[in-house]
Each structure stands twice: as C-alpha cells, then as structure tokens.
Length: 130
Image (cartoon, rainbow, N blue to C red; front, side, top):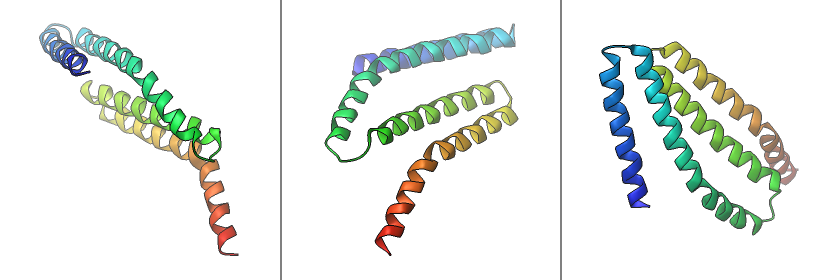
C-alpha cells in the first residue's frame, strides 16, 4: 500500500511538472496532461476501492438496515469525489465560476439522493414522539 501511494504521489508530481512546463507553450495541453494524470490516479484508486466496498458491504449486512441505504452511501461518496475533482480541475484551469457551479450541482445531487433517507429518519423520529 505504501509503495502504491508513493507511486501515485510521484505520478502526480511528475504530472504537475509536465503541466508547468507545457503551460509556458500551450495552456490547453497543460490542462489535458493534468486531466490525464488525474484519470490514471483515479483508475488506480478505483482498484483499491473494490476490497474496501466489499468489507463495508459485509459490515452493513450485519445490521438490520435496508440495502438501499448502502447503495445510497456509495453513490454519495462517488458524488463527493467527482464533484471535488471536477471543481479542482476547473479551479486549476482558472474557471472559478465553473468550479462553484460544479460544487452547487454536487450539493444538490447529494440532497436529492438523501431525501428518501431523511424521510425515513423523520418518520422514525415522529413515530417515537407520538
């Protein structure tokens, strides 16, 4: 795990150096090189995600909660990561307004995703007090 982390860090540092060098000549290519490194690191991170998801799923099965909650949790984590990466790329490209728009979209997507859980929670709470 440590070796893989060092490799990912090295890839990011080399990608940043390449982007800085390319930025002097062609700003667009610098951005695309940064995106390419992000995609490579994200693909490697997804390989690590599978065992983590399996372990979380086995822990979740020990509870009496509905499996839909686990799927919603995974979707929420995915929305958070995608929104964060997208906003960072937009900021690095000098597009702060696009980064803000991506973050607003992510927040609204999370709110929409959690509405059924909020409804269930409020049902439990009101059932306790009645």
